[in-house]
Length: 418
Image (cartoon, rainbow, N blue to C red):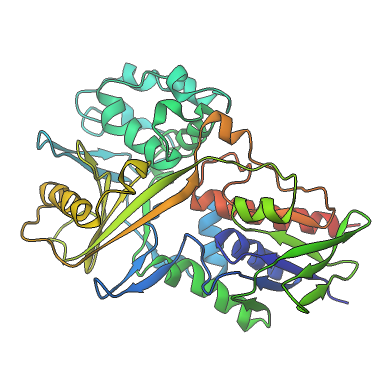
């Protein structure tokens, strides 16, 4: 008899676990509490701009091996597009200075040796001062590991770590920051080519996975919220979805719980999870970008941090955005638009726009909060955890999400081997 893996949550961590288990011969049933798959990694039609926009602007890099393998498995890797080499243009909107970091295409960070390819007004010794991050522990603060000041910090390290950690970098976990540096700047340009889902996150990373599962006879049930587990002999024995909607688990059935931390703690009393979260603010403007606009532009000296150019819109991401979540929407949109005009070479009145404020976008990647992230194994022998908030060794990123799903699936498969 074929065993069933019940995946609780159809975000990208749950879907990656589902795809991996299907490819290993499991029967899979995905249960999603909301009316759409994708979690934070999804797109939707927005009436204010008359566009399909993403819930958040997520950037992948060519070195995100698990995320790319997942996209490949669902036949969607071609939807991740970007420049041929790892080039990142920046602008300081206070001074008007523009520059480009060119990490090249190699496997070694030789770009730091070339004055024309590194951050202007920086020398090799500035980069060597980042070395302590590479071996720092997750309990150490970034601010205790490297100098959080100076030209290199302001023009590269601060924007990179702010986007990755979603906290002010000095208060972030140096170990998590080090993981990012090892897998990006230190791995050379071959790992740093930016990849963007040009047709939207759902079209590239979510809908193909749902179709992949459906085409092979597996189910993704939306609006199907798990209310509680029944347990016996140290295992989950039944899944209660409310009323008489109860699924009894067979001997070899397994559960992968890939839900947000608050929901996980409610379902598994005593589960330790992060308790502090930080906001991310995304904004979308319906406008055709000027010809030659970079797919992604780093912005220094304003409210905007990263400017994304899509065929019919300009979108921005602002990390650690708690200070902006209660700002009046029109005022915030105008403030962001003013930055875009300075950075992106556009002008004119405010075009149709939408602001998306995620108050609890990611856990705060501080040492204290990182220490609260649980591993994938639970007290129930047939129940495993996934999610970017679990202990992945990375901050809350798409790559971390997919790795958590892959790891949960691998633990399921390991438990099945004699």
